[in-house]
Image (cartoon, rainbow, N blue to C red; front, side, top):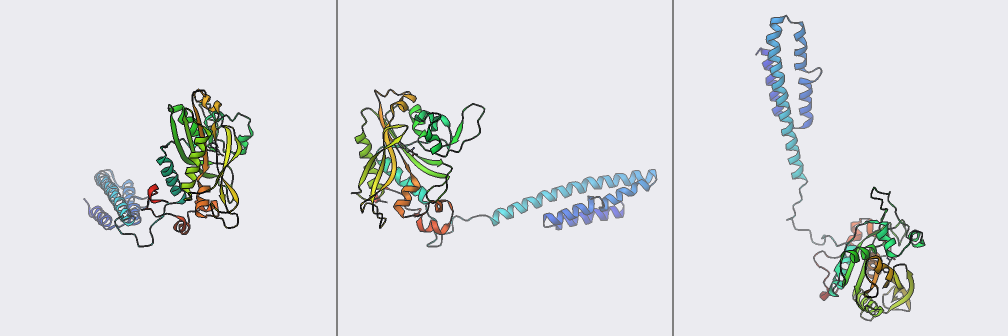
Length: 355
Ligand code: PHE
């Protein structure tokens, strides 16, 4: 190997070994193999040499180009791996470090309310059911006795999704009631489920958010009456709000999928905001006896089976229970808010300890 070639080789290898980052590595690469790099320069000179000299030198230079290309690539991989390792170490969270006192995270009020609702209905023998957030128009409306042009469809400010190849129209579910349909289609009665989950409506102000949470409830069995519905919901509300004497009122209303339908109110004081006190009423949930047509849509004989259903807004219940004034604050991810309204993560919602 002629002197200049071996000097170039050594200098390049030394520089690579000394390079400590991608930037330096790239400078070396360009200075050797780039358009006006040193090796490229030497290769260009070959054209001016006579044949025998060119043959010898050309072979040398080509071998060097192969060697240096491989060395540069290998060093590049090494530096990349080292950079990744350094990042992994720098970004690593040591979960064994104790949390500074007073700075433990908090369970979000929505999660906490779901835990509490689940604990109460769980104790009454209800299981949890689920359905998809992206729901077919049929499950969300049609099977629930809400015909094509019914005003309830527009009342819900539905987010419609583009039609899909299977020909089924889909929506972001406006209510968890579609889980009633899925449960009845997929299970034999007796049925006793609640279905907490996200719901969506195109609405945004202090008491409405385009995404919010509901909890559905469904009981289907033989000889189910309005008495069961009332007993179940009165019990639930009294335990949830921690008021054994909480006044509960059932007021006639309308939902397409229940008959009779009712709105459920709890007693409170408009003046002080106190739940259970005062002369005023506050609507907290919707309920009713499952409409015979809905049972039939799910293949159940309404002569044999009856049921009741209910649906509640989880944020609404949480706002009332915890005195949270604005629904939007639930989704602002403000840690100060969470520290104030959040619940200790190490204290699970257990019925026997009270909430
Ligand atoms: N789905 C209804 C709503 O979103 C609530 C409801 C559920 C009413 C079940 C009756 C029975 O308003």
